Every structure is written in C-alpha cells, then in structure tokens.
Length: 173
Image (tube, rainbow, N blue to C red):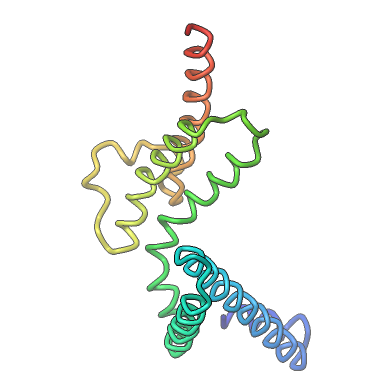
C-alpha cells in the first residue's frame, strides 16, 4: 500500500492520492458487497431459498468483514496467503477448462485435472504456512517451482494427457 500511495503521489500529486484512496475504498466496498451477497445467496439456496438463511448469512458475513477490517493490510495478506496459494491455481485451471467448447472436456477430465492442480498446489500452501517443502523429494525439479508456479506444468500436462487418453479410449470402445 505504501508503494501504491507513493506512486500515486508522484504521478498524480497530493490530490491524486485522495482520488486513488477513494478508488481503493470503492473497489474494496463493491468486492465486500459481492462476496457477502453471493455467499448469503449460496447459503440461502442450500436452505430452500430461505430469506432467514440469507439474512443470517449476510449478517455473519458483514460482521466477519468488519472484524477483518480491523487488521492491517499486511496482516490480512498474511492470513489469506496460504488459502490463496491453494485456491488460485484451481480457480485459474477451472476458468481455462471452462473456456474450452462445451462438451469437449468431460466431467472426469475436469475432476482429475482439478485434483492434480490441487495436489501440485500443496507445496506452495505448506510453504505459505511456514512448512518447508524441501521434504518433497524431487519437487525442486518441477518447472517454475522456484517462482511458486510448480502446479502449471502438471496441470496443463494433465489436461493434454487426459484429453488425448480419453479420445483414444473412446475410439477403442
């Protein structure tokens, strides 16, 4: 945040920092509203579109958000980083898999690729928790591992291998 504020001040002047702060506040607010309402809607759907479930989930989400707002940005990032190290690779792979034409990739391939991605994201998750991932034999040989992206080659390789394998298998049977 200090870096962004300094860059904003250098590029836009002192008044630009206020504009930048307003933009950040609006971005955070709209994101928070989206997360709270989306989660409350999901919870409500689990309980037969119950309005009470929606209200309770929205209240709890907003309350947790206010509690989290008491932490500094650095504290929030430190808390969120392990979860993000695990969730982002899976999210990226799901977005890419959904970009393929409908019916081109089967449910089985989806599930297996997400499983491979999740497993290959674990070393970064453990490292973010402070657990040394040097205990995983051979992990240092995985491409892009040194950049925290060791999941990329196994994930995309599994998409290709599983898709080709499934096409060959379906032609045989």
